[in-house]
Image (cartoon, rainbow, N blue to C red):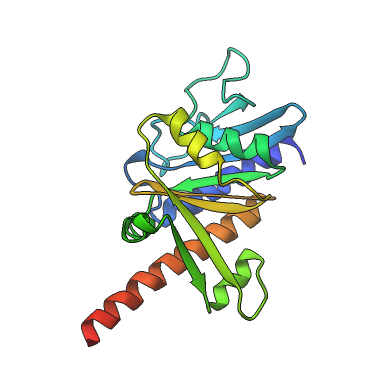
Length: 207
């Protein structure tokens, strides 16, 4: 797949997530692999309003998260090191990180447990789990202010070619083989977060 095609895929995801209001206050970042040997990827530029489309929305970086070449405008997202860990440790093609109210609230409610578990939901099939009793576990890690420390903690949970990690009161990072798969999985997790919060609210209202 060409560099341009990967760029267009990431642009489309950014536009869709912006329409869902998943980028409050310039938060969130998206990354897509452009080369495997050596590792290179596109990542959203830091501090940009992701509701707007410009030629400088993404920067091209290497396996350490540094800009490739001297002619690029902008700088990589502050959380590029999270994507560096994904692309260096797996063959994943896309890594997505968003801050939503639902995933932040879930991460706070379950943060002391260090994880949240989901089962009995049809949407789990979107995560590639088709067993009738399938259970999905999402680890929740501390929101370290120091990004290298955060990336090191995050890296401990990159064990498969697709997955997800919640950062407490920060956001979720999801990675998968392709942009389509990563987007699908992120949508599934956000559905599960929203469902869980609404169900808890209904139970409290009833009882």
